[in-house]
Amino acid sequence: MGRLTDSFNFFVKELRSKERMKQTFGKYIDPRILEHVLAQPGAEVTGGRRDMTVLFADLVGFTSLSERITPLLMVTLLNRHFGLQALAVQEHHGVVDKFVGDSVMAFWGPPFVKPEQHALLACRAAQAQLVALDTLRRELPDITGLRRDLPSIDLCIGICTGEVVVGNIGSENTRSYTVIGDTVNLTARLERANRVYGTQILIGETTAQAIGSQFETREIDTISVKGKTETTRIFELMSATGQLSEELARLRERYEQAQRMYLAQEWDLAEATFRECLEIRPIDGPSRVFLERIQVLRRNPPGKDWNGVWQLVEK
Image (cartoon, helix red, strand yellow):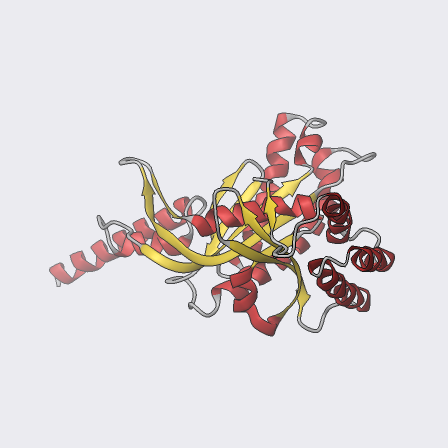
C-alpha cells in the first residue's frame, strides 16, 4: 500500500510539474510543441523536409504611429496586435513561429494538421487576421490615447505552400522549432509584394492549387524573384467561395480580360480594359501597376518570345 501511495504521489507531483511548465512556457512555445517535448524528456525535437504552408503578416503604418506614442504604449499596442494575430492563427490550428518587429510568422503542416488541410487553414487564418485588424483599429484610440488624426494601419499577408526544412534549429543552448528554406523566403517576398500591388493577401501558385474551389482568388501576375530562375504565378486571396461581392466579381472578370490583352501585347486594348477595372474599383492596386507597366513596355517592346514574367525587385 505504501508503494502504491508513493507512486501515486510521484505521479501527481510530475503531473503538477508538467502543468506548471505548460502554463509558464505555453506563452512562449506552441503548446503542441511543448507537449511533444514533455512526452519525450531529453529527446531532440527532430524534423526533416516536409510540405507545409507558411504565412507572414506585417503591420503597415506602425512606424508612423509609434512615433506619436510613448514606449510603454508602443509595447501595449504591439502586445495587443500580436495577441489578436496569434489567436487568429491558433484558432485555425497554425503554429506561431515568431514575432519580428511588427510581423508575425506562422506555419501549418504535419504533425500538427493533416497534409491536405494546411493550405486551407492558413488561408482561413489570413482572413481571420484581417478581422482582427479591424478590432485593433477600433481599439487604437483607447490604446494610444490619440483621438484625432490617427495614422492608418493595414496588414500585408503572404502565404506559400511547398517544401521546407522543419526542426529544432538554433545554437547549442538556444533553439526553436521552426521552418526554413525557399518556401519561407518566397512567403516573405510575397508579403512585401503586397505593397507593390496594393493588395492585402497574396498567395503562391501551389497554395492556390491546394485550396481549389474553397476560396475566390484573382490571378495577379507571373513573377520571378532575385536569385531564382523559377517563375511563379501569384494570386490575391479575395474571399471564401460564394462570398465575393458583385463589384469584385466584375472587377476580376475585367481584370482577367485585361491580362489576356496584356500578354498578347495589345497595349491599347489592355490599357483601356485596366482603366475599366479602375472605374469599377478606383483603389484597385494591381490595375494601376499594369497601367504603369504598359507605358514602360510601349517604350521598350519586349519582343515576340516574351512570356509576361516580371522580375520582382522588392525584397
